Length: 124
Image: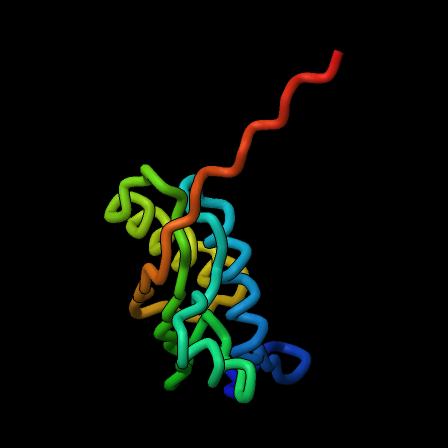
């Protein structure tokens, strides 16, 4: 567990990489076109993940600067470059605003495409 530590008037503040990952996940899911934050289910990789599960969001902290990698699945028909750019901006802004940690870069890995969720039939 990486920690970002800073001093304030009353003592020290530590923010774990897990908290940064949670902020990044919520910021990612706010973007239209993102189906889910996931590692995907790719054959042998999926089998290995069941043995040693990994997080679809990786946070690397070095000297209070974060590099974040987010693995996502997008909806069919979404414009992947546009969705990725919006995710990068939202993750960076959300993490920096909530934690005061500088985000150097946000890498996006698109691991899958999901069919658009069906629209529920109107109730009468």
